[in-house]
Image 1 (cartoon, rainbow, N blue to C red):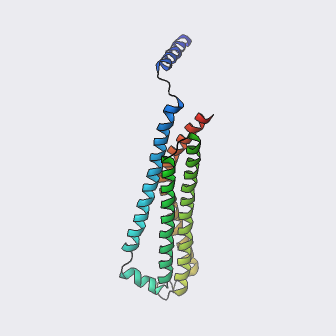
Image 2 (image 1 turned 90 degrees about the horizontal axis):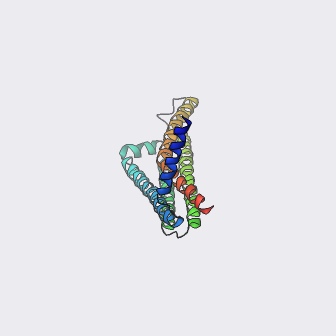
Image 3 (image 1 turned 120 degrees about the vertical axis):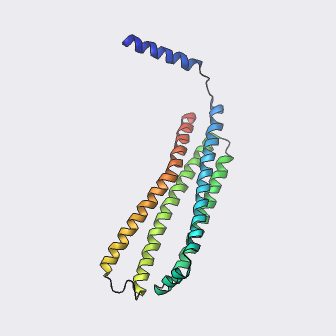
Length: 203
């Protein structure tokens, strides 16, 4: 049994010797191309999300929605939140695009490493901002609605309403977190692999 294992090891070693050896100059362009492609997809997904929120705002901008806003005193608040949210999305989309252009035009592994780190931080900031913005804006909307409502919420206990709000927001936040982890998480894991390969080259 030992002899067979030794023979297998020798065969693998012989195969390794016959394979072409790739230099750093050969590997770097491949890592650069892969990293650039990943960051490009991050930019594209953020653009799609931006379009999604615009479409959603128009979809829920009908007469029923306006009537609900009027009854609960949310007209001004909803307008402010929409403007702030779209403004923040434009900021992050432009940030993702800038990261993509930086990586695309990188000419050294050291700079590429730095740009990958910046991209990872940008994605983390974006995820945390999106979730915090949703939680805070929903909480403020809930408070305004319950204080100004004279119909739907007027006859219901504040404790029950608060528990229902907490349960709904917990589900929404978990779904949102799962979505971001699935979409951006896949891309970030691939970017991390490129980062580790580049670190090996720098050693």
